[in-house]
Every structure is written in structure tokens, then in C-alpha cells.
Length: 256
Length: 313
Image 1 (cartoon, chains in turn green, orange):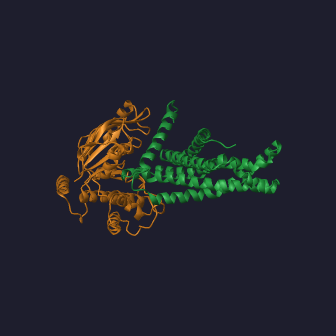
Image 2: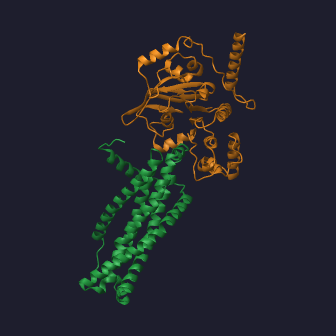
Image 3: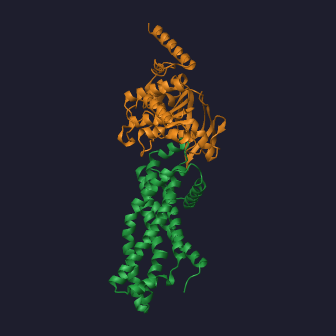
């Protein structure tokens, strides 16, 4: 493939056009309920276990860091508040995003890429069926729903892990830890995190689908597509995360 | 009755590489046409352009009065319902068994009851000789079976146009013969417009009404079968005889001097015009009710055979 200065621009344009297509086709009937349920089940099954296993040490690391930081600052009574805030606001959407992209997105990309290489996608278009409506929309919706649910899971497991490490291992006081939970965090933090997860799920699925549907060059092309989809998704997710966090702080008044 | 496809000034390139340019031809309604060409001359690209999967740089493809290169996406999906396409490897959906694969277009596009779908699917599976393989997955069957299943799926919506992308690649000669017979029988039965993209000369000699040849980024010739089989155009003759001497080289093309020399060496023996024997045309099987078009073809073939017998005496 030749490098061209407009190549990157064209790629991002096509990706954006695909995202618009997904939005446009989403309300079209008939809704592919079967595909949606299958995909949601599939994405959930490949992400739940790794997510739980990642979020325990993640919660622990945050608890350890905050535990020692609050001790140095002489603010042990706030360790619960700080760790809940960290897990809820940042850690859980990011962990969710990484796993949705890493486990769910790669599977979507590899699946669609293999179908593209075998000309299944072409056959579908010739049979008069829009692959975006038939395959991509159910995957995007499934990934969004699973991301929202996973975010809840990560929050719970992360906070529980933080409690365990702070109270049991670092000899914190359970009462103070629990009592300070709501001094800094508020309900809108949870909503913001869920909205982030929703958007991350959509981005991961759209990028994976785009890369899968444009795979070319045989089996190697599918491998390349999967690789690129992970890299692109991660970059987009972290940028989006930054923007959404910045907007959140502007829009929602903070406590304290 | 099938639909006529009118292609005008079609040009396609990927980046700076021109695949073919200025291709103009008309696929007559209800007739069988074959598009020949050496490997890598963009035959499959041509086929994909006809169904609107690829957009040409220039030119038009007119089907049932509509230029499909200018249609919007959703209109394209409507026009595509006229088409049945057999892809190279069958392009079956790997996650579905053969029955579901073949039933797929019916379930998506029609409101037929499941029992009616079953009747149609089994009828088409019988037609391609796949009865009994319904529960098998595409990964579990041979390439030839996948191809026949792909053909059955292309047939369920009773298309007006059927496109075959190398139906004979990867099949043994006996199966190719069966498949050719099936194609001819189908044409007599459903009267659709057929386009077969291939580089199998034997099929090209027996099956079609019309032959086209793509070479060196352009359509060398397109016309009735007899015209091409007896043509003196060097490229056409080289390809239809499958020999090394001629303009087509291992790497795309040769220089003119070498071609001259080779053709001279080949000598006058094969150079006398009209000396090539016309391969007899494949006719629909005895059980098939022939429409008038095929009756006329059969009569002409019988006439040719009589004349040949007389000449041999």
C-alpha cells in the first residue's frame, strides 16, 4: 500500500461516515433482535470474567496509593471518599473501555473481517441486505448495553476491592471508610461514568466493525484489521475520556 | 424473461493502476454470455461493478432502464433483488447450515410461510443435487458442494440476472461438465440473463451464446460465440486455443517482435481462416421443456452436425 498524505484523512472520514450510517440505520425496522441478543450475550461472555479479574487489582492499587497518600497528608478520614471517587469516576469507565475494546472489539473485528474476506459481506449486499443494518447496528447496541452493565460491575468490584485492601490490609477503620463514602462522591458521578461507558462501547464497536468490514488482502488482512482496530479504539477512547471529563467538571457542580 | 444489461464506456482503476477502460457491451436479455480473460485482468472486478459493489470511475451500467452507477444506496438494494450472484467460493454464511443459508433471502425479503420456504429451498437443493445435506455447515463440505449451495441460494428469489464468478475453478472436470449442464438447463427453465466469468476454455466453447474477452486493460472483443470461435484476432485465438504462442505472456504481455516471430513459427497450418472446428453447443437435458429460443439453437446445432457429417463423407 502506498502512503498518501490524504490517506489518514480519508480513513477517518470513512469511519465517521460509517458512524453516521449506524445512527441513520438504527431506527430502521425490522430490528435484528436475535442478532442483538446473541451479540450481547457473546460480548458479555468474553468480557465479564476478565473485567472482574482486572478490576480487583485495579481497585487494590488505587486503595494502596490513596491509603498511603492520605496518611502522608494526615487525612486518613478521607481515604474512603477518595478511593470511591477514583474508582467511580475514572477507573471503572477506563477498565470497561479497555476490556470492551480488547475483548469485545477484537472479536467483532475478527468476525466481520473473516466474513468480508470470504465474500460473505458482498453476498449479503447482493442479496439486497445492508450489512450495517443487519450486522453492525446490533453489535453497536450490544456493545453499548454490555459496557454500561460492565461499568456497574467494575464499580462494585473496584470499591469492594478498595475496601478490602484499605481496611483489612492497611488497618484502616471500617466505620470511617464507609462514612466518608459520600463526602465527595455524588450520584451524578455514577451517571457520568455510565454515560462514558455507553459512549466507549459505541466507539469500540463502530471502530471494530469499520475495520472488519474494510479488511482486505486475505487472512493477513484480518489480522492487520484487528490490530489497527485496537490501536485506533484505544486512542479514541482516551481522547474521548478526556473531553467528557472536562465537560463533566464544567457542567456538574462539585462538592466540598 | 430476463433483463438486458447495457454497459457503456466503463472504466475502473485502483489508485493509479487502470484495471480496464472503456468497456462497452450489451448482454442480451435471456442469453448466456461468458467473460473470458487471463488471470488478473479484472474479470471479478467487472462482475462486482455490474452489481454495484464497486463504483466505476467512468461509464454507465444500465439495467432495466436504470443506471446503477448513479443509484443511491437504498435504491441499489432494490435493483440488486433482480440479481443472483454465485461467488467464487460460494460465499455461504459460515454460521448457518446449508438449509438456513439457502432460506436466508426468502426469510429476509418475502413473507412466505415456513412450509412454503421449505418447499422452495428443497426444490432448489434438489436442482443442484444437494438433497440430504441440509443440516451441514459450510465448513464441513467440499468446495464443489459449497459452490452448488451458493448457486441454490442465488436461485431462490427467481432472479432475472444470474452472475457466475468462476463457477469451474477448483472443481474436477466431471463436476465442471455437470455444472455446465446445470447452467444450460437453468437457462432453458428460468429464462434469466446469464453472465459467466471464467478462464475455462472448454466451458466457454460449449455453453454460451456470446463471448467476451478482457485483455490488456480493455475488452478485446465481445460477440456471438461463433464469431469469436472463428475469429482471427491473435489474442482471441491464443486464448481460446490455450497455447503459449501469441500476445499473452506469463507476465501480462509480450513485446510485438516476439509475438510476430512466434506466430510465424506456428506456421500456416492453423492460420487458414475458418479452419477451427466449432465445438458443438451444450443443449438442455432431455427432461427439460425447451423454450422457442432453445428450440432454434438445437435446430441450428443439428444442421451444423449434418453438414459436418456430409463434409466428412
